Amino acid sequence: MEMFKNIRLSRGRSILRSKTSRVRRKRFKGNISSAKRIGMVWDASNPDEFQVLSQFHQKMSERNIELSILGYYPGKEIPDKITAIRYLVCLKQEDISFTYRPISNEANSFINTPFDILIDANFKTLFPLEYISALSTAGLKVGIFDSGYENSPFDLMIDVSKNTSLNNFLDQVVHYLEMINTGSTKISE
Image 1 (cartoon, one colour):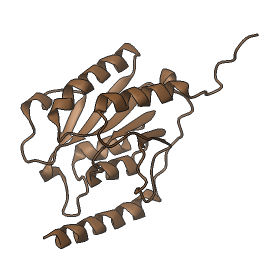
Image 2 (tube, rainbow, N blue to C red):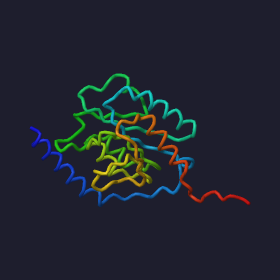
Image 3 (cartoon, rainbow, N blue to C red):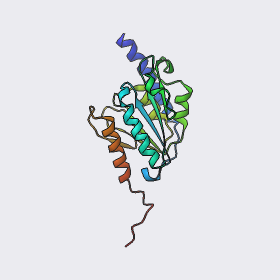
């Protein structure tokens, strides 16, 4: 059964490689202070992390940044506490094709939304989330450093241990995005 899964995944990766060459995006020239829209992909297999996402959404709202989150829950039934939130859409197994590619309208809409920044919180490197991040038209893509990534779609990769918390990862993302110097403000002497 594992061999059959690997064949399906290999076909999905092949389709992704052919599509990534056609992705056109406008680069975001700014830092988190100048961002207006942030998209985030999230591995929703641990629904307990939802509280961290709520806090992150609140922090971004305080900065006048619109945050949209697309999660992937590998089970059939999405837990109740993450279903009725307007800034979070969660994909489940029926939204994934035979080759593990997201096929829902929500996934396509997310991919085509021109976010200023995309944050990939995919600690388990789930292919449906990889697919979305690779094809996203976001101007700046931030993800977790992984030496096994064939052709990383990320402009900025943050090296955190695989057992780090989502909260720690998001703190690191904000920290490094605040450090980016866009040259838009000049220091007066």
